[in-house]
Each structure stands twice: as C-alpha cells, then as structure tokens.
Length: 143
Image (cartoon, rainbow, N blue to C red; front, side, top):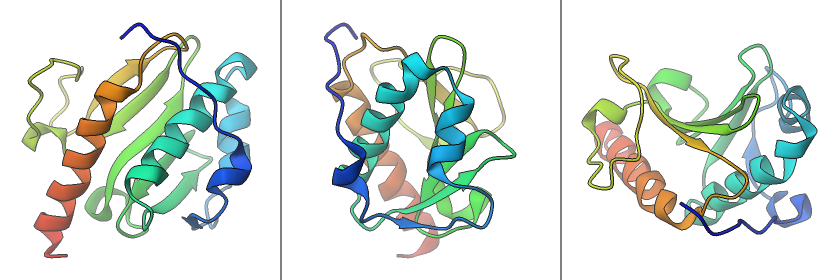
C-alpha cells in the first residue's frame, strides 16, 4: 500500500448509528496520536460508505471503535479501529474465517486479525476485506 489517503470530514459520516454507552468516537480518536486522527477518520468513513447501515460502538475502555450489525462486540461486530503509536489497526473479529489472497492480515489469535494501516497507505485494498467481513458476519447471523 503506497498511495496517500484523502481525509473525509467528520460531517460526512455523522448519520451513522452510534451506540455511545461505552464512549464516543471522539474520545477513542483522542486517545491516539493527533497525527493519526485524519487516518482514523478516513478509515471510519470508508467503513460507513461500504456499509451505510453499520452500527458503530466506540469502546473508550478498549481504545477501539467496533463496527457491526448490532452493538454486541464478539457476535455482531465484524471490524474495529484502534490507534497505536504510528499506525491504526483495522481489525477483524472473525478473521480466521476470511480469505486473504493479498496477505494483508496479521496476527495469530484464535479469531482476530488486523492490518496495520499507516498514513501513506492506499486504503483501496482494504475495502474487499471490510466487505467480506460484513458479508460473512451477516451470513453467520442469518441476516
């Protein structure tokens, strides 16, 4: 991934259904380095663009924002964002079941995998993973 991302203003994604019982997107975003805020915003906007019916659940205690078909983290969520020192993890909660022909997914957990996304990365290859994760979660839940 090498082409720079383009930041999307937060105002363009304010229509997302957000469950703020555990925190807000702004709180989770603020936990990460300021230099990564535009990348967080762009990844969030991409997920919402790919799934306009997504349910966003910011989890300030976890330092992550989950995205899914409902508010339950491990059963209804299909991906998450979490900022680190120099990258943002785009994580997938049931990635052990996913196809990854481009070899983007990292991790050895029982179910979780992630992609370390850096500010200069091209986000286009990530769209297929988000779509696949959403489709697989919907099928698993019979939706």
